[in-house]
Length: 105
Length: 301
Image (cartoon, rainbow over all chains, first blue to last red; front, side, top):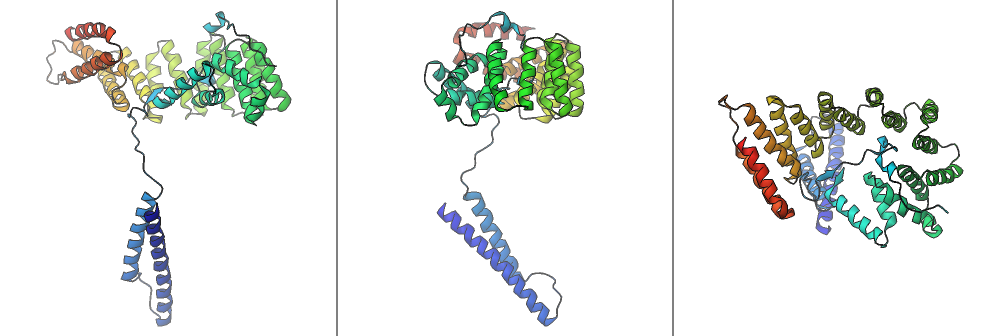
């Protein structure tokens, strides 16, 4: 976890720095009275780097991925649940009462 | 859905509990979670927990869930006296609760007092029109009285409102199959496959229905759905493998002498026959001769 988490922190810091630089750039534009057409190229590069680092960290930090294999041996569906909402009580088991002397005390 | 690991877990816990090892509560929770109908075991082990005041109080608020579970299991085992006791306890704890009211109505059902049960359910429905379980109980009641067409009518009405309820679709499909109305049943299974395409058992049943309907087109479709089942179970489903063999030989019979160009390649059948043989060799070698003779008769026809 250590390395991945560290990379994630760096990524977030880079993204924060990119946001900060953009704000700075916009105030600079306001002073020089120019139109804002897009972020400067170094901010864009920063953004991409931050995105890559954050994505990588988000994929590695939480742990290993488990594959979804519907036909893997442990995972395959062997039976459906009994439809208990539709259960009826006058079934053939009625003819053979249980000889169980359980009682609630 | 019960997966392979869950099934093994249940069986392990069951034998452990039956042989006096602990884990009764875990077993009961698992049975409840997987919605299994093992009423006799639930009754036996549930009562042993409920009669032990120390164990019972350790459950905390889950105690009442257990009472409900045991009450239903008792009704299923025709121990109405026990069910009544459980419901009484619940009534004392939750006076005026609808969930307890439902249990009372179910007790009436178990006593076969249909008119009273119907009255209880309709008064419960008046309070909450959209209680799905009560609607379903009405269907079950019609079925219990042998009024299958009434049950179908109720179910269709129910499904008009709650279209996404796949348990109800499954029930309707099973009822139609029991009446040999395969066309209608196939519609229900189409709905189920559409709703949950990853469950192989729906594909399997749909294929069974199509195969039963017969006809060249249906056989081709059935073969495809059997193949889908094999795909989803990794070839572990014997019924689907048998289905492929039957479909291929059925198609062969229907197209015999027609000498079409689009003749099926026999590869699918030989492959599934091979897998079947392998499976039988591993699991029950004594029945292998039976299998080989059955397969031989299929290939000859």
